[in-house]
Image 1 (cartoon, rainbow, N blue to C red):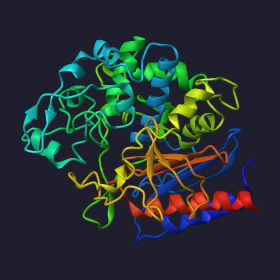
Image 2 (image 1 turned 135 degrees about the horizontal axis):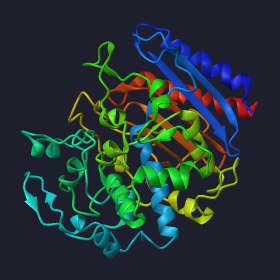
Image 3 (image 1 turned 60 degrees about the vertical axis):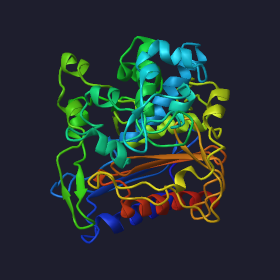
Image 4 (image 1 turned 45 degrees about the vertical axis):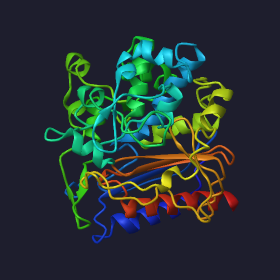
Length: 413
């Protein structure tokens, strides 16, 4: 059951930001759950947009962007369990996606060279297959010009035409790898990715408000997208991922790329039920539906890249400053412990003292400044959601840690 202590602390913390015109943050939602799927704390603060009089509520719908990746990982691992996909057999990848057998690599001089080494599903899910993002990689950004690459058009060509930026296995780099994993799910299952999610993940868990194509009711609850220009004040902006929101017929939706890397819209409380399922070893604690075996979840939470213990300390440039701030390190931790990456998410290998999160917990984020975590040891997970660009908004990240700490503090008392 929700802790009144935690909920009051979270509400007060969120209100201190959304009610402060200096921060410019219109609204935030925070939800935390335990492994029973029960709410530990939940609060909404502010309004759905800076110019909106509609209050932010727990029913507000957000574009969750890269928080979609974890769902795609679950889909991939379901098909691995069924023998339709393989983590380590590249021939399965090439049979389903012959484009990956032919893909070339963009070298340091900006020239295309032949691929060396094979691409596997494990590499795609651990971001070592070699793909990048044009908003994080200046070399890829420049190669795409004068037309440019845009990962959020809803057009498959923007993903299919991107070259590798690293040779497979050479390094960790965040990119369109999991969009390709989603393509493998579609071709192995014979279903569009959103339809696969609905049938095999969302419906068994009883989730009705997560989709790549929000229905009219979800769209009526949609939070407004915001932009902070040059570190100054926030303002409302057009939605960065517009095309799925405009597709109203099945025919229109069929023409839109189902992005396994960034395609979903959701209510945070429903997303947290997927996190509760991971905490409960693959079985939804409320419905009893098993979507993954325990040993599969264990595999997802194993460090896939021990050879790269400092992978998130290599720095990320603001290749497209409207979409991301520069980041010298993705997740600074005291003492600079080895960093880990599971199958689609970051693993914190030591305890996070500032909040109380246990070692070997998972977390990841969405471009519009959404963050989630899942702590299997202590049975705690949660999400904070905003719709603010560029990525790396310090006000939102500060609230993530403050609210997470409030949850762990309430568990201690």
